[in-house]
Length: 296
Image 1 (cartoon, rainbow, N blue to C red):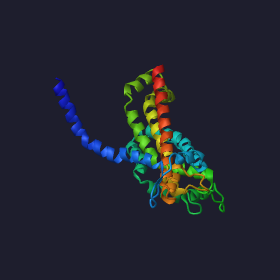
Image 2: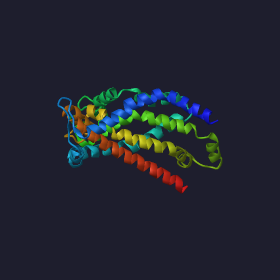
Image 3: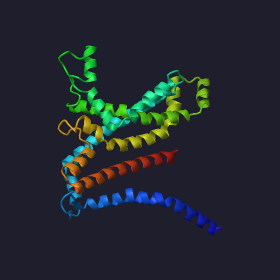
Image 4: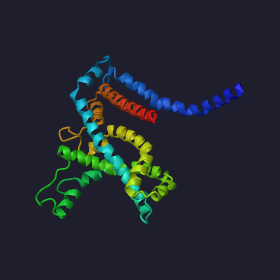
């Protein structure tokens, strides 16, 4: 019996071995190499030199790093709740039985298949002053006076709104699909029983739909926080991190430090600081979820 089990384990390991080799080579080894880089003054040209914990000490006292982390946190706060609320609303619309059901499902998801560059340049076109679609539409309906323009991309508050709206339009399709799948898993009998008991639409939504969506909402919240902290390309294309670096996220600062200032060791150190932040947030969410389960 033991020999049979051992043979099965060895066979399973042999099947897993190709994946494990590729995983270690392209995931684990780069991570180990990245940690090594943080202890060196590492450039693409000069010979690297060991500097101990200097990179970590510099990161702690670097105002630019904390400002960039703060900008990433702002984007997390702006994008995560709106992404969840809009995802639920779109899923509710697409889950209703109507002749337009297939159209809704397609049109809500289509932006998600665009590349980040295409979505960002479309956003750039839409929010440009003088020639942009939004300002032109506001002029057309006389909300915006003829000789006045809204500078969506060069005023800090408006730049954040612009980036958030473009990201929302581009990526909400993924959350929409997850919520739609979760809604279809809710048994029809539950809705029918609640209607027989006299529940109205509002009561059904808040007391049945939302509680059933709670597990998927927790997962989406965590994924959204991680994804929002890693925001880079759309901000880089739409605002370039401006005005005056007021929308520059941490990933853009890492990119500029590593590939424009040629300081790869310091850029790697900032990457690991971000990794620790995300690790702490993930652990915190895991702890909160487990504590709630324990209270039940």
